[in-house]
Length: 66
Image (cartoon, rainbow, N blue to C red; front, side, top):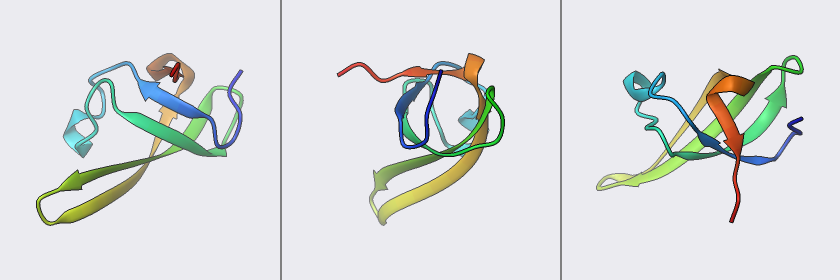
């Protein structure tokens, strides 16, 4: 089960078109259902930090283990 503000890892290539690669570390910012979430992804580019919010299902992410 995932909770709001959990850190998760993207486990699929489904979001590459958005610029979110497999292995990207994201935070859950909202819970739509027990299986659907809104994620925030931030990364650095030459022009500065870029943030993106997108929806994902539980089969597209896993918990981040440090």
